[in-house]
Image (cartoon, rainbow, N blue to C red; front, side, top):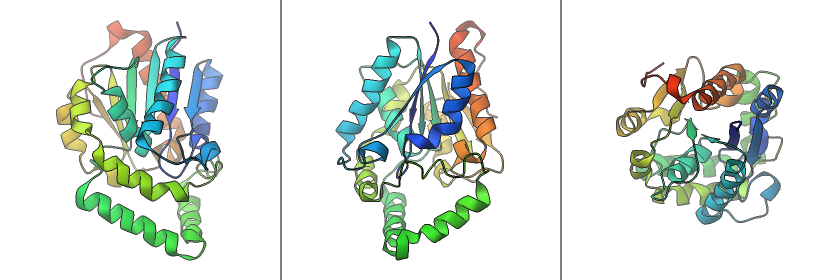
Length: 248
């Protein structure tokens, strides 16, 4: 049975952020599902809650698992939610897991600072989109430049989503994940703050740091991230060839 891929987007964006990955997987003949979390993308008018976010991920994973082993891939907030989901005490049918740009514990001073900055941006004219556009123009290639915004930005869901993330027990979840796992971070990603702790808690996971890349690793270096998807898929297809954990 072929590997099935489920993609979970980050905060404010939507399933459209995965366009480059979905096109790559489609060319290779792999089935892929990119969800929209509540309050985001096609579900912009829904209220974001953790319960509904987990229901959304679980629904996609269990539907995919009926067709083959599931590779779960989450970016940023989607990665944090997916850690909690994959590490549930009653393990879901996940065969492998890529946690991208999410090696940070969302609580305390760091979370409060992030929320304050987000509210500050929202208070700017046009919610600071002029600055966002300049940053994206300078950092993303043409092929992925508009993917993050294509499904709209979930401004209304942002603060409530950030606030609710503080209840996640990520370290406990990481201890329970026993499937092949990869942490993928950009070299300059601000969410690398707890990277060493995460790799200590989950020593079987591989840490892959993409050079000269920011938090938006999937869009800034799409070919590299696609190659990492290929690596994960090959590992799930050939479990006997899986090597010892390594840091790249």
